[in-house]
Image (cartoon, rainbow, N blue to C red; front, side, top):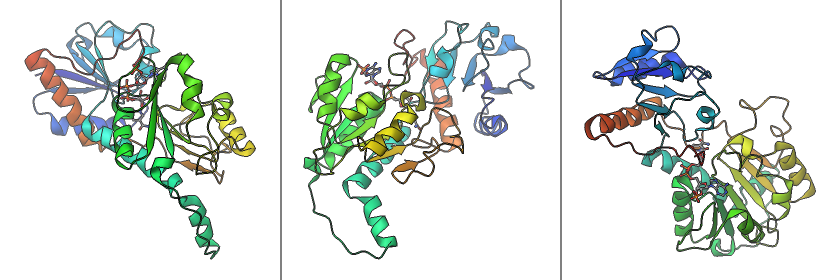
Length: 314
Ligand SMILES: NC(=O)c1ccc[n+]([C@@H]2O[C@H](COP(=O)([O-])OP(=O)(O)OC[C@H]3O[C@@H](n4cnc5c(N)ncnc54)[C@H](OP(=O)(O)O)[C@@H]3O)[C@@H](O)[C@H]2O)c1
């Protein structure tokens, strides 16, 4: 039996607490702050944007679970104790992201918004057709999520190219590092961003990057799909790129500020598709089960999988 603290003040802590209690007969589940009890008991923490300084108050902590795939909210705490940080990865979660990416790539490839517009205006006007192999999808980030999405898109026969921090030997064209970025962008019609938020990637989706995208492909313009993190993008630059034509459309699941303020021009922009950070969403129970199975693994085998490299920041 382990003692687990639920430390997710920004979400619905009671809902998570109940889901954990319901699904973990073998563990004692505590809820921050009112039902945290004696902090000396806590062995595992499930955290999302924990208040800075809380985690260092837990002397018997064995591991911290980030309740999302990103860990920037934890690494921002300078007093973070030196225990493994585990990020949320799971095959089902990966498939959810691939659904989101594929859905949006297909929407651009099949001119969904144009035909929606034509339907609303009773216009029968077929556009010229093109093949998936004529469209280049540029995958920024070739980690767990980026590679899975890339594989699916390649099954549709899209021409996929990738960009990562370190060199890769894959069965499609890849680029890496700052030096490889211009060549990666120059051939890309649809830019998919599945990067983590780090000091190196913050603001990487900016006007200069958008202007380097290919606009000579069969889609007649360039498109952005960002499901990484909101602070990867400069939203004013997205709006500017859409108005000057560097971008022809943007599908955005994440935003600089969440919830996206109602004053944001993105809400009403005809070329923007917004979802409220749900690209890889799973039911609460499924996420709880992922955490519980990882705790089981640590307790029975001592193996900690999906540990974050603190130096790299992801
Ligand atoms: N919207 C949502 O619902 C949702 C859900 C889940 C995850 N996410 C986001 O998706 C991100 C990616 O998840 P993942 O599991 O695929 O992460 P991951 O396995 O850690 O992969 C990250 C990838 O990004 C690359 N990268 C990191 N820093 C870079 C840099 N400075 N320049 C170029 N490439 C860089 C890495 O390169 P190397 O391969 O060379 O290391 C790696 O290929 C998460 O961090 C999270 O923010 C969003």
